[in-house]
Amino acid sequence: MTTKIFNLIRWQDVVDILLVTVIAYRVLLIIKGTRAAQMLIGVGVLFLAFVLSKYLGLYTIDWIVQSMWAQIVLALIILFQPEIRRTLAQMGEARFLPTFTSAEELRSLEEIVKASVALANRKIGALIVIEKETNLKDFIEMGTQLDAKVSRELLLSIFHPSSPIHDGAVIIRGNRVVAAGCFLPLTLSADVSKSFGTRHRAGIGLTEETDAVVIIVSEETGSITATAGGALHKKLDITALRNFLNEKFVKPQEMKK
Image 1 (tube, one colour):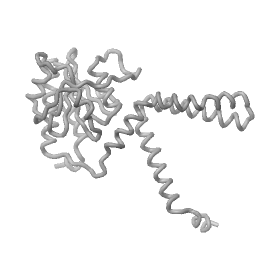
Image 2 (tube, helix red, strand yellow):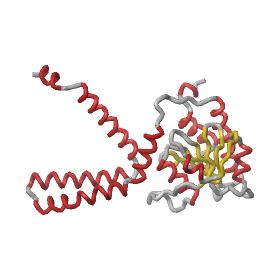
Image 3 (cartoon, one colour):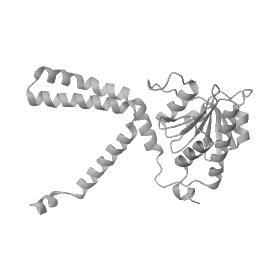
Image 4 (cartoon, one colour):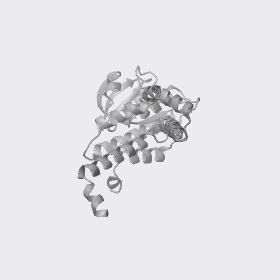
């Protein structure tokens, strides 16, 4: 009996199941901890109501749920728009081979840490974006394009209040500052504290749509906040910020060197 069952399974069926499993797993990772997870639970409840109405013969509920399905699909596309956009962007920019952090990029991370702490000590607001897999070309084009080596001095001069581009975000790719004065999308999440200003909302908004890492320095409190994947890490000191960036960019084998 068991042999017959295995004979009926094609290799295509195995590949099909594995692909569906991987896709489902990736989708769950993307929506974990976001509004989409709560919405998905709501959709699950509606689907359960649909199944039970069929099974129990609840014709009125069955008619209502069936009438709603067409609108639900459209509503899901609208409500899940940020998650769908982020997923497609990550798929389009995904790299199939592992990348390794160069020594120059490691030095750049240290320069970013030093600049962030110096800005915080002087209570100078800053918004520093570090690009990862997702290309930030659209945001780079909206700012003042540069091509300069990352350094503490450069970042301090860009965010100095007298600089004409100090209000926007700096975008860093590898060991180069590629743009400054960039505008980022603001988060629409209701979970974000009302005490956060535009810089924090812009930083969170970008990390909700891309895999970039953003460092925010508050000009009111001088505190350093880092965000990735829409999650906030508040009140970081130099050690915590360095560890955060190493965790996001440095491969384990390189940290041991």
